[in-house]
Image (cartoon, rainbow, N blue to C red; front, top):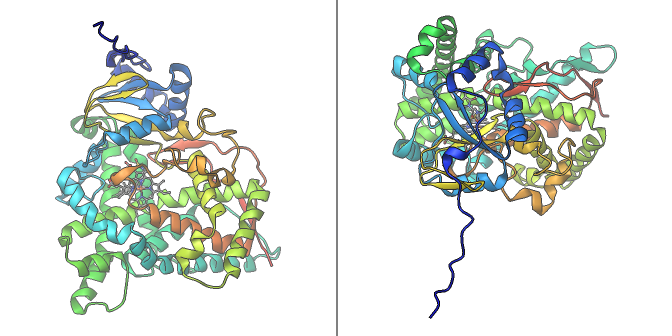
Length: 479
Ligand SMILES: C[C@@H](NS(C)(=O)=O)c1cncc(N2C(=O)c3ccc(Cl)cc3C2(C)C)c1
């Protein structure tokens, strides 16, 4: 009998055939440095996708990655990430922990160590039950911020306030996340905040800024090639760790003197549970303290700007907030879940301004991306900036339209990737989302927000995506 002809699979192309950006690895790195182009990495990736197509390979010094941006390819990477998903390590951060003999938090851990810490932390930091417990703390701080703005306005004769909110937003996110983590107020929203906390905020910014130029260098080289930068980086880390150490000591001492009877923050719960050694709790709480400042403040600034230059969207969200509140004061998590448009605004901000511009994975087995064979162990990156602004993925991508997330279609299908995906996604996701939503509920209920410039904000990449110049915003009381 004739053998049935087997269907010919459209043959998968070899790995070496993937289009490449730039030239040799070291020449590329040199060009980046000389042209200070690292801060435009997100724009360069977008241009490479436009010129080379939906997949391309990039070599920068020792860094060698396959870049994709379509949701279907992100889904493929999720399928092969395994039970210990991995991102590229950060040499300068690891070097600091080793030299000071600090333990690493889950961001820097991998394998079994990562998984065992992550599973314990999930319960207090990202689970719905854990989130419900710290929501009231965030709500208190968001309310205090609205009062802080009212106090500033009363100082003016014109009953309005035009301000660069950049520094105030950093104080808000540090105040809010510290309250959720330690159950303690830092007092950053009062008239004279303690200089020590401002020093911490500045140290986080310096650390993030100095991370980028060191990112693509092997440890040995980075100490000598960029001596001054290296010292600045180490000093910033030492300030970060000493601040976190002080907060942790305070609560640990109180804990030893008598176990708190009611919920008093994430750190206290971790101490009570005794499922993690103290030095691991410290390492992770330090990551959360430092990781909870810029990452949440900057998207808030972008959201305020977009609501200021899209007054109709701002009004629609204000109506949604009033409607949600008129349904009587129910539990905070229920109130937040009855504001889909506000949630959509957060998603819209993170689509256009993704704080982390890529999600990285090492496939645990060979995977086919855009019909090319990508071997297991190859560093792959999903370009979130290109994804969020691609007309192939979002209709009318330039338009700030929270409504687009209310339709079933947009929500699923690997399009909202700003917090990553799977078991290794951002553990601070619920903390960040809740902080931003509660902040906007209190601010939008009390103030109308305006801005003069309607032009797009230029963005720069400094290990986090931020505005080149912070926008000037005007706040006027609504009543
Ligand atoms: C910006 C984005 N980059 S990412 C992870 O997508 O590549 C990001 C997202 N979520 C958290 C962070 N963190 C920080 O900012 C930070 C500072 C100091 C320490 Cl000790 C730990 C951190 C982490 C990694 C938590 C950074």
